[in-house]
Length: 141
Length: 238
Image (spheres, chains in turn blue, purple):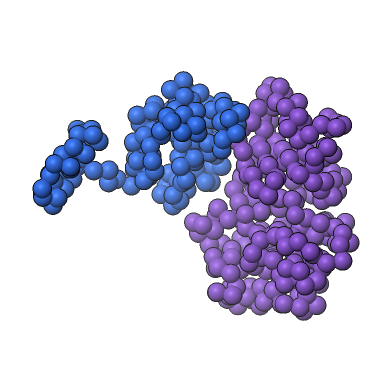
């Protein structure tokens, strides 16, 4: 698990003179695990069964199982749907997005703002998509 | 529900007290497709909001075919049409082929289902014109369903295709303006579909081996007269 925050790491990186040494010392702080491993971890922490998560994410079973098994790289919207399915909070969702190489949710973007609201209020995918739809935004999933 | 003089937005607004929006499935070329859920019954359906009237969907209203989605209503509106259709819970052939290739036996079953759907359309003078992996659904129960009739047309609509419709790679020469689309247009695309299922590639890059390759070649002859002349002959060849 991470012990340094992203900002702490960034501050160190800006100050460092020797990148190789910095990288060696902070290797364990880096996000390096495959997405499928992260998903399984978060799934276990959620206490939910995979089938239930997939149902709550409103995704096709085949597609979702492909993501969990690592056979398919999900796009950002599908990953967010899984986050809702697992009942993740904002912090865990941000970690999940970063693990997959996506930008974290940014409250100044209308789509992201609505998704953050949905995560914080523990809304369902359908409820959050209702908000997104009313804004004329794309939907999660 | 009748449309009267309602616009597409007004029609949708009338549905929202009864249905909630689950997701936006697609938005392209002015066509909007939504997945809706009945607020009390919990059943899903698909709503197409089209900027034009669709003879294909209106024909599907009266049809029942396992390999075609059930169309519940097609409502003319002042600025187009609203179509309420069965929601197929499943995955597209495109999603499957992104991860793995089909074995011949599986691909044959999928194509047989597509041929069955096309046979029904062609018998009523309709051409799908956009047969491709993204438009073939496999439901959770293994049902093969041909979807997306937004560019479907009656064979007799125009003397020639004056606007390029369909999908690059799957559209035969006649669909690109040289001659009129007919059932053999769909057969061309079905051949490409078969090849993609088996090899992951267009036949111009990699032709499927053996018998499948011979079928693909016949489907994709430049001259429609050299292709299978109807989907039944293609299905028999499989």
